[in-house]
Image: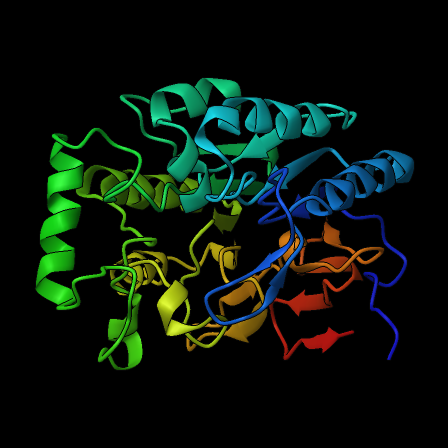
Length: 322
């Protein structure tokens, strides 16, 4: 099946996407489910992504969906590892917009991480938005706003997160979903939630986008729809966040990382959810990255190798092409 490319029209803008590089200078390993992970190869995937993005010459910017360094990276080498991966992103001929993932927070505090990656935000927060064209806005969420990792141990957001985990997950190991069923499996320490202030900001931002007649693309490390990702990878309060999003018709697509296998769904309100395949799980000489061509009536993800190309049409049933 061929890709639909907007009937020959030029996209309004285009941007590169990659997720879950999780680089570390350590031997290959496996996830807790036994999936192979290629810690040293992942930075080569990023290098090839940047090379391709630059050769395309029509990309306005790139978005990194979080987890640029792995949690197994030795702590005394974490800062250098983050700087190394960040320097590879800087070879792209345009701005790169980053977001926080759980593996980033295992290695560095928000205080160090945000300036390193030029992530805007106030008081340690990492949510922001920008408009690449008058008719579109990208909204970047901070899925670890309420989190047991990344904030100081005595911070109110850490306390709130630990309270949620204690209430929702009875296991001594809060990263274990044992005994949890369905959506309850999301209450794990490596996930997080969006707090009250960010929720109010999101509501205000979507109202503003509606007033300006802008279409919105939501970017989040943590997925927001269970049909596009496993229950264990969802944002803790994904249902509340989607409740805000569904109040408005401006949000067309939610893109996420974190769930390494990737996924795609269209929810009951017609919002597309695309979870990106992880760079970390690419065997040598394979890749997972892509770019989005954004049109008035659709967004086309053009994937490379293990990242599936996906034509997300706003007004009809789209198709997923491999």
